[in-house]
Length: 419
Image (cartoon, rainbow, N blue to C red; front, side):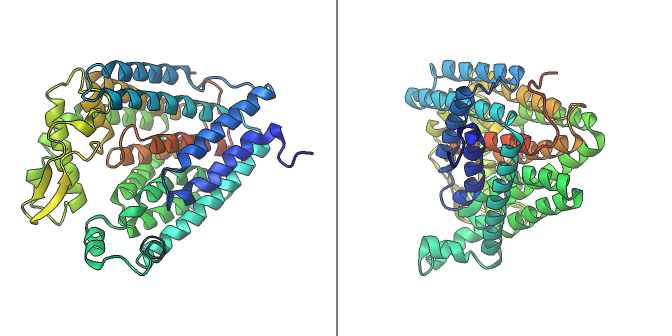
């Protein structure tokens, strides 16, 4: 008799990723990509072998993603670097296929598989939160031991620490900020809303201690949106969809107006070193968007934009800030505008509106709607300040986190979310 029945291989595959993804992010944040792909392949093969049927989780969103990949591929024709553009298009297509399979399979796992995955995630999650808390409270003792041996070069270490916080744990903290929501969903079902709220607030405290402002802001936005959805349901979803979609469409205007860096840089108590760098990156991005607002510069063009490797200098603090474009704009909406033009912005605004409308449907469980919207808000905010739009490890992590939210829901989710 097989120790791990083939019929339950999808559950075990998901469980392995669930328990490992966050601890691995502490030392090698890009490693989970291979694990997630392997879980998708193993699960899909097991489903097919035993006749367990899967279908596209949402035909409307799937169609929109296919259109995106098509436009990304077309944009390679005028991209500044054809190789980067084609490679990026292929990677994006692969991410969407793997992610779509993950989510579709997650909706059709058996009860014992869901229980196994739920326990695995809880173990990996709380272990990672404990490590991050130790790092925040005691001046990163584990990082010093792991990375620096006897200790880091004092001047460089403390200069970076002053500017960015415990910056090397940013990927792990960001992942915890999006994986806390399925954990909280499970707690709300078993122990009530107070336990769920305490779980999220624990991660808020950890993000604050690590000085990860992006994760902290994402979590707070998630709490606000989740709370509003819990109370107002569909009306909150409509309002959030309208605000976020409008923000995406006007994004290129903000760096030249309310977010103009030269206007904000003298306010040193408000604008951190990291945020000031972001503001200059966004200003440079907006200037380049204005040159090709309709078609954009092409897929992955951000990394090779003319002038992108020029160095920035903060006159107020008399310090270097870094490159004016370090590989990508660190903002999802601006990167879509920059590389894919108006069609890219319309795609993104339509996608977020569709997601929020589906997540606040009246027939979905109230707790599920609130937690899923909180997870959406955290992921969107982090994507708006930190990682590149096409980074595979981040995209795959978002797909897997959303899949875990579906798995952790007590309510049965419809096979097709179009209704």
